Image 1 (cartoon, helix red, strand yellow):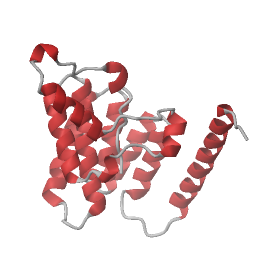
Image 2: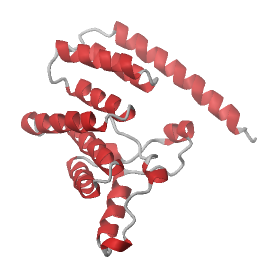
Image 3: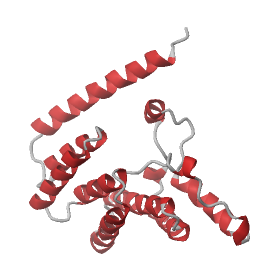
Image 4: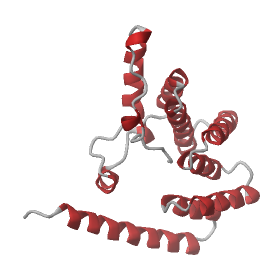
Length: 203
């Protein structure tokens, strides 16, 4: 039986809304949250809906409750990336990377994933602004830290965003590495139509 793409998109959209509602209820009802978690989770929902000003307000509230809340710091950085505030994004991600480097326990897998995502996201910002050598170093640091959260979006995300073969940190790092082996006048480092498809990461 053939199902039209519009039916699939409608189904995915409805499921996405349903999951968002369930998630919101869980956030509201879940007991025992650590300080800052509620506002960070609410900020994530606002961020996913493109309500960037509201998301930033929630992340700021989270940081008032829990300074250096790593989810809120990452959320602020993503707001800055999505709104074109690249300098602020780099500053926020650099702070988060240093904070995690100084405090991360060896057995903290979630924290390691956050650190990898911070390196990857800073690399993306550097890449889009023509700082390709810095981008490559960040991509390699991300992959050395924890490659698992950087493998790219799952099948559901690919359907929703219609990116069957999305860019990943590993692919971009490999491409840049090959380009840097070429003479400078033969390198093709900036590919806006492809670079814009590289998704940001949040574990």
